[in-house]
Image (cartoon, rainbow, N blue to C red; front, side):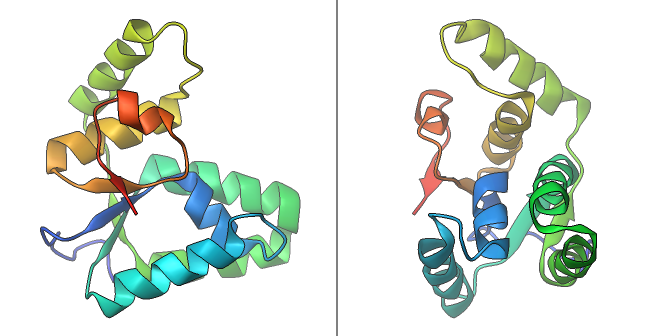
Length: 140
């Protein structure tokens, strides 16, 4: 799917954990992530990934699985996902959420993913429970 593809209402937004889990067979979420991806594909749902999430996941793949593998993985994601550039207001909403939930360790990556999901009305595919208190629907 190209970066110019149109978002469908039944799209799912990815967070970095499932992206990484799909890349690493030794990851505890690898098998569930593969099953969930198969469900997305079977349901005809598109996959949307923010550039920020892609950068986070790519860094994990590069550092843990190596340069050659990370290059191949990146091309696979670019060929199969719709890329979304967060808007400035997504970052502002994310920073507000981080300040609101001071007792939680929410990363900017995750807060921006939640803000984009909220703005576009998309569920976020994640294994992180803190998306619940960020007010975003988790895709499962």
